[in-house]
Picture 1 (cartoon, rainbow, N blue to C red):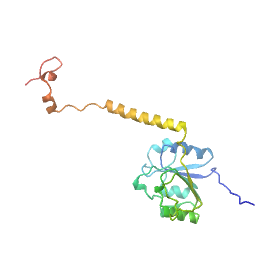
Picture 2: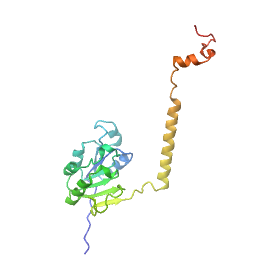
Picture 3: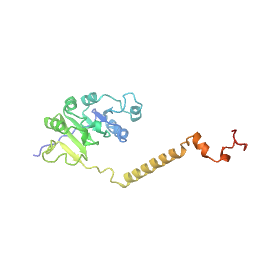
Picture 4: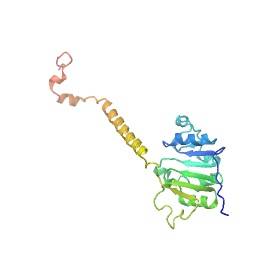
Length: 211
């Protein structure tokens, strides 16, 4: 008899969401529809920022989020200072058997620490969307770990998504050009005024300025 694979349900689960990427708001609504509670964290957004109300997620600290969540989704936009953010110390804070889905850059994770967390069972499984090339190559810490699943980034390979991307770029260019056009010109300096023809310096009545 084949081994039965038993899954888990979102109902009554706590889901942590790390990052406030554009997908954060619609993604936060999905677990709630199944009866889950969603918590949020973003290192660049203060806990009292109004952005959390707009997204509809109560913010907490990262350690608190990891301790409370049975599943975590990472949507954090990458920048160099976040390299290795998920380290050995953070994985020790994770709720045992936690599941993790990463839609951000794989450099957010310390590869050795992640491998140990998966091998020890601290993490039940990790799904990474298009990690950096070579992350699971032989000789690397995450090579041949069955609980690490790599998924291809295919969300953008649709006609609709490409149309949305094109319109988003067009709107951004239009906004930049409109802002540049509406920016008031800087007042002319005294040296600029001296170089202008004398009739350009006449007042509205046509009289030249006093000497």
